[in-house]
Image (cartoon, rainbow, N blue to C red; front, side, top):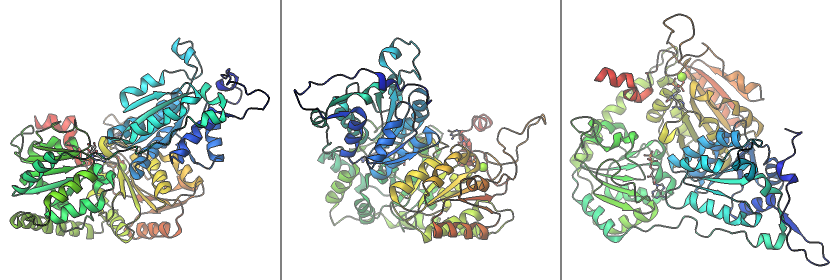
Length: 591
Ligand code: ADP
Ligand code: TZD
Ligand code: MG
């Protein structure tokens, strides 16, 4: 769009009071935004340039901020969202107006849904023209469009309000239940010049952006009483617990009480999955059997079957299983969303868990041994069964034999970040690959969204500086595949394994009319490894576990951007992975 005049450039700037004889030092909107971000430690931008924010990206880079430029805003947005999860600071995504904004909006909604702090900053067109709908370049009332899918939305019209705008966006993103915030910065704002000293004096360094929320003593007492009376207690750790970074206290609470625990997907590794109290391998036993369940940063949404139904021992799909719940959550509105919560504990997880530890003291009677013993028995059986399956070496490879390799590699490299999406490629990885450290596993989250892959890889590498390993379904990979160029451009230590089973769930569907490929299948025998070679990365085609192992090990050793096309038996997957029951045709069959 080189021939178009940047709207802001020609716009009249408000003239600050001129100082008599001396030339006045001024600061423009671009610089104010950069300084406001820097002042608050927001030093990384994930975005995609264009009018009106091109110069913002250039000048931010010149000012020392890290600017990661993507090939599609959605991926930049996902990167920002997971940066928020990993750092407890809002991840920043920067886009152009209307279409760029909309591309980023999916990620903003994703951040809000997952309780990740993120700020989507989008340039926007001339207010006067937008509001009269006169057809400006990339015209859209972005603030109105963003509002329903984010936690808060703000627009700044004057350069001397930039400090307040960014401070409000930060507070909204990280305080209470974290979420996505939209910040609308019209083109004209960037070109505004104001007196430098006066302008800088309006910038705000946010103090205590996410204040502690201490639980009420009576709520702590209620929770402790309920746990005390439990015969079959269970703790469920959710990604809120991972986000909270209260790792030592969470571990102490679990070990002191002796209560078995189940980690949700992104809480895996908060305590090592190999911990003796981890009940993952006996999930279908502990959920219906437990009598008191303490949720720590986990919602009773679809991922936990809404806390009722057969999963929880209820007679029908709607029946309550009889469990009593303690729910630790920062949102006072979360309790009772699906079933009755007998002891809501509202506060931040760090404060709640330390209050529980104090209340429990040293004389706590550990969880009854007939309960923990019964769990151990199931676990031992299931782990042995799994070991048998993993030891098989079928040809072609299946999910198990390929993931057995990933399992070993993660065990040997517990600091590596694991990114995971797909259906079977997701569900099998979650159950087969043990995690050993907190916040090392990032995946499709609350929506089960496809497309987070490469954006997450970029942010995971940039924010943690660790080696990243992505296990991607071939369909899942396609949503963000072009970002392998981004990964190569920034030379990030990312190793992508595409679990190539020729399609969505399986590669075996056919069009009954014989005209077209079935909607769930892709080009047979595709060579995804060749994509990364176009950008100077390392591509490997792996048809055996040995080849896969050698390729991942070499990627970890060299830290070069690598894409491994892992050829998986196209008949190996199941429809929808583990959530077959949510498919309407499955529901119809049942009825
Ligand atoms: P999962 O999908 O792992 O079960 P969810 O995303 O459903 O986890 O739940 C996360 C919960 O954690 C949300 O209800 C959110 O309000 C809560 N949460 C997030 N951060 C904190 C925190 N610092 N303290 C307390 N609760 C938190
Ligand atoms: N679009 C988006 C944004 N999110 C989704 N979850 C889907 C579509 C539907 N969907 C799934 O839920 S999993 C999946 C799709 C398209 C892809 C599964 O295929 P895959 O994995 O190749 O990634 P497997 O290993 O073949 O099962
Ligand atoms: Mg597939």
